[in-house]
Length: 591
Image 1 (cartoon, rainbow, N blue to C red):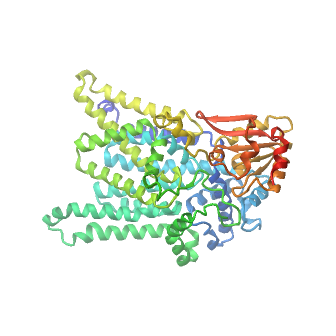
Image 2: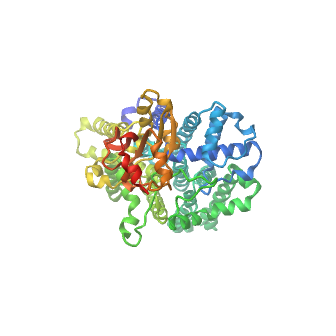
Image 3: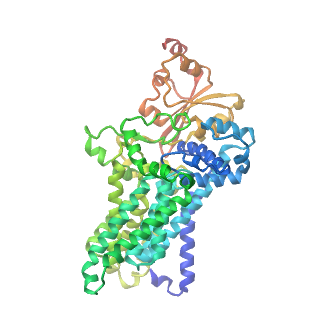
């Protein structure tokens, strides 16, 4: 491919390629950020309000708001509050105990929470895109310009990765910072032992932990990679007469990495400024507390503040560790197959063959070693994230850019290998055009579900309707369209609607009154029946009828034809019922 650009000055060529990467990463993530709200985002909008207020009052201990800990997201949301409602920090309202109080307070002051959320998404997209661009710069040094370019274009147009990295939530920055930390450490190992690179890896690692607890998997991963590299080089180092080579190649870099890693967490986590022991211990022990909690299946217990948690709308507790052990331990690879694209999967197959046969670019030993490091990270992360029974496709996001990069190298290797079978006239242009087609096909998969990227399903997997019916789908997508449908009705501002994910995903778009269906509510009690009867419309969601929750609701509407059904990517997500269409006797027959 270099031969196609040999007449372009090197600096201009690299600037153009960098611009291509920037644009490709931003386009699916930065457009139409006002469309649909994910359930997870609402809870963090509330926590971030308390975080911002605590910062404004210099109450740094109060910034310890969640075990996740979600500090990166709260900093990003704080920027959004500074842009949309800077006065919030000094109005004396204190730390609010639930989201409903926050929304009421914001509306009283003429600020809509949706505006803050959209601004937070813009800043989150800038953060994720910026981090990924730095990762591309590192990948270029490690794997070569064009293998890295193809890999990052596949990442840019990966529908599921684009979906999550445009949300104001935790998994996007976790994925981005883990990827950057890993790439920087691999560059340190295989492209020169530069202190600046290992510092970049450690800073990114610290921010990954502050983004979300699985970032704690980075220290053992980089430690193992460093140990393996030292083991592989031991004979060479001894032959060169390097004394204390363990200190130089393993212990000293490990101390630098660990020190910068800890200092980064202290620098960006205000709670650690004033209570380092308490908040540090809480952070370190958080994975064990989290596993213990979900193992007891109490994932719907009240969150801090006394309100039922709004998070993880697509999260489930998998109870089949004993009865279905294979399903339990393979559930994340299965989720990846559902959300990945055929282009990525074919690229991974090509990379596997090229790596074994040492085709270009895998003919270089250091590239094979670095690729092995990426594979090792994938295995470690998959194993550790599988242990807790609570699972969600979003939790597996850090693997997506790693496998996307490997898939890109696989396609590049295939294109280079094809030159051996092409006539001389086509050796230059045909492989390049083939790679362009590969990227365009990946982009087509992505844009086919714009802007509802979370609805994407691998067509190979989705071809089986029976398997598709067993998926738990939906994090709030489509509820904005349900609200838009009801907004068109005469007197919509006076309508009362009972809705699943009503707080945020529906209410942010509906002009009337929204009553949310609570996770723990039941419709076999008179109070709930009376509440439904007082409504004008009922909005139910896909993961409700899949799980038949809450109890007692679906017997009430059995056989009633929805007034409106909303489909995304060929899948039904929302049903809207006119409450008057529900037979009167069903209300009276309930106890």
